[in-house]
Length: 326
Ligand SMILES: Nc1ncnc2c1ncn2[C@@H]1O[C@H](COP(=O)(O)OP(=O)(O)OP(=O)(O)O)[C@@H](O)[C@H]1O
Image (cartoon, rainbow, N blue to C red; front, top):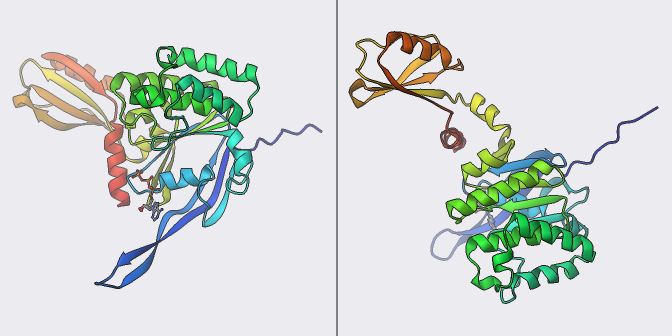
């Protein structure tokens, strides 16, 4: 009898919790103790090779979750396994299987040229020379590192350092890559280049990517799956399209007219969202219907100068989702 092999998920969290005890001032001398539930029962399974965007408002518990997943913080409750092991007790083993890029912490040696940091990391992780050389050559090419390989890390620009950090996290061949705000502070060109690299890495399917970000363009470009957390709980787990569908996001049709219409046409599923520029611009919101019917009807009526169909705005839907959770 043949059996389908069971593939261990890259990450599995069940009822994951982290409580912090904090002291607050209550009067001149008194302090009271409170418990903050930073992560309040997260259930999450991430398959091998998936790219998941882990997003939420400030204080939602994203960094705390990533710190537990990378073995930095011990959970207060629930179960957690990353690459098949429990992170904190098996931290050493885990370190060889994961790569971590946390904006605030660097894994590079500040005073050494980038090239030397990479060489040191080969010894830290005991990576065979040929494997290391192959991965470094790929990163040099794809992340365009050559111009600053011999520059000390402290002299690198933020964008150059981030390319170095990502290389450093990949040189030992991790199965899961954790990225906390990888594009924060980068200029538009650097952001796009980094997103392109990460999108290709994710599409390759060998590395599972778990990414937190406040930059919604990162999500649109990189994350087929989106996990939204708020107050330490998962409030959405699915695709971006599902998030739009669930929250009633609408496509919009922006119509520019030569002369304003006396009466706006009625087309099922298309309602007037707003009228601007003394009637020269009309914005319709579509209730799940294609734009074709409305555009054909407008073309019949005449006087059409320009038409644009706008996809729903992720910023809008996420803002609404956060507001609802607050
Ligand atoms: N060491 C700590 N001691 C006490 N409270 C903490 C500690 N670390 C985090 N918290 C609290 O836990 C909650 C979640 O914090 P966390 O940093 O995980 O959120 P986040 O989603 O990563 O936020 P941001 O987007 O601002 O980085 C917040 O209320 C925060 O104040």
